[in-house]
Image (cartoon, rainbow, N blue to C red; front, side, top):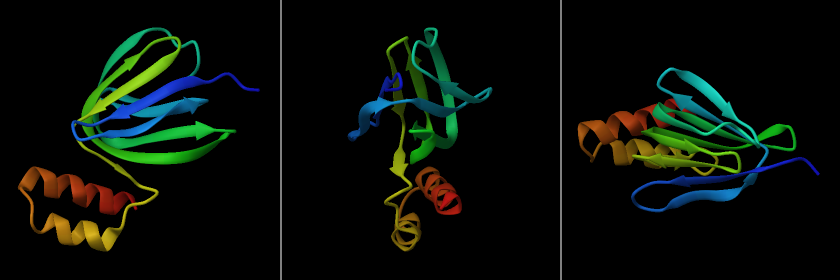
Length: 117
């Protein structure tokens, strides 16, 4: 069995993901970075982008986040995001409708999600 690291992706509203994974790729302000088991401790600012969750050698989950912070240790990675949407279950039509009825910052995030779909 492959080594794993514990992923927790959290927004102010809820826990988006909480599971053991082989690797996480996150959008840092200085570029994408990957987190594997036994990673060196790290605190990183995150920008708007896609967090990819890797299991069994392939991407199993994708989340669009709107900035935040990643706290990495040898055993875990915790991502605290301003906003996040699971791209695997997102509905573009519903997001377009919602984007028309929210503030500018939220609409910009939702439009980025729609482009990522």
